[in-house]
Image (cartoon, rainbow, N blue to C red; front, side):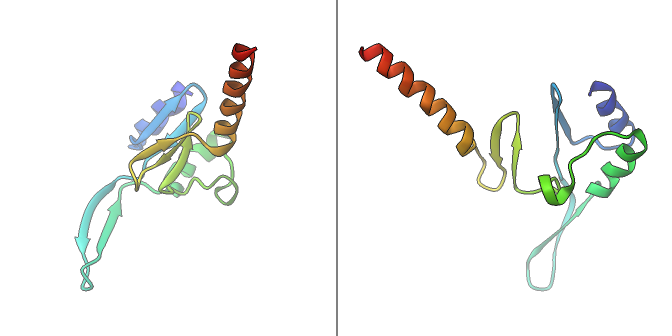
Length: 113
């Protein structure tokens, strides 16, 4: 994975985070302008197609966007946490939350016995 990150950075894809075998890309605006309706329009230096152009010739396994949703959503799962970039919050996904809740309840029941 370290080599892949180096290759991506060589191709000016610098907004990449890596943790062991988990990789996450951030879509950071390079320029923002107001349109006539006073809405922000953002321009980006990279898009999902930019990343795939580098990864495809290397045969890097990649989940399809419509299955895994990697087209720069505002909420992303990374390192086992759910990152909500719009709300600036990090939480546990429900499945993981329930798993740890069960472990705490088992521990509590044993401690009470």
